[in-house]
Image 1 (cartoon, rainbow, N blue to C red):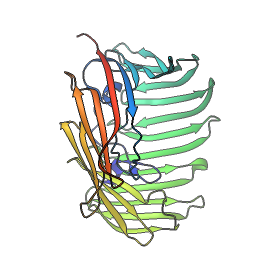
Image 2 (cartoon, rainbow, N blue to C red; image 1 turned 45 degrees about the horizontal axis):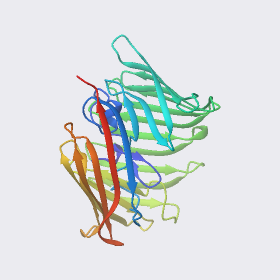
Image 3 (cartoon, helix red, strand yellow; image 1 turned 120 degrees about the vertical axis):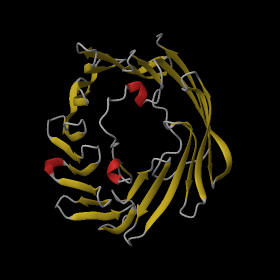
Image 4 (cartoon, rainbow, N blue to C red; image 1 turned 180 degrees about the vertical axis):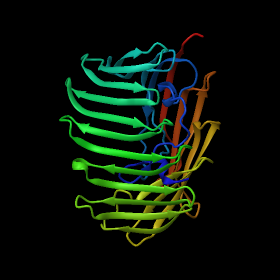
Length: 336
């Protein structure tokens, strides 16, 4: 599975999904819910356990919705959290077309009433977004799609309207990205990644402000065949990446200047198909030794949404499963 299927951060290659263009998921589905969700309220207890994992695949899954309200079609209209009796978050105002599709969305600070975000929505997703701080424009995004609904460009502007970054992606009709390039301020090329699905060959390169190569590597059929970086730093953008597999496994790679790449594997188990509600996530080294782990126990409702989950963790510092987090949800549904 090519790395062009993930999005890139400081040490993780993680580019967006490359499935065929489909009807976009609802906000409720993106938050991990099934069924006609109306509202969710979550309470969480964290235990004082010393545990952390290295950069890479996530073991302890975060909560994406603390207090949320949704329209009958799954569109989020409220999101945030109550602190000391005061709701802190956002309330959304939606405009729909004649077919009921959201075409305009405005998010407001629930406490002050000031606008936070304004989005224009097309058939494939957002086409523009304007972000505000204290009612003043702080950033803008302009997004284009190809004829098949795959994102083709993402232009980010600062509050003054100057380019902060430009992301361009070329995708096959079947949804496989073959090239992604990112330019920064003053239209300087920051990095480029290419993939040839015929040969399963992939190239990745980053550049400094003068246009010189900072880091580059090549992978063929899942194997790193060349790696070079200019810096001696142990953490350089692009030197670590994650490759997710359909069987529930994820491979983490961290490469060094001497061309060696450390490989670790994370295996996930789930309660049901669709990769909802993981029951375990175990991180092992190349020899199969367990390094880190997280384990989950659930109480589920009729829609298989959890109403209670208990998370425990394991590492060499905690040789026994140790309680890490305990979460409870109250979920209300729209009546059919």
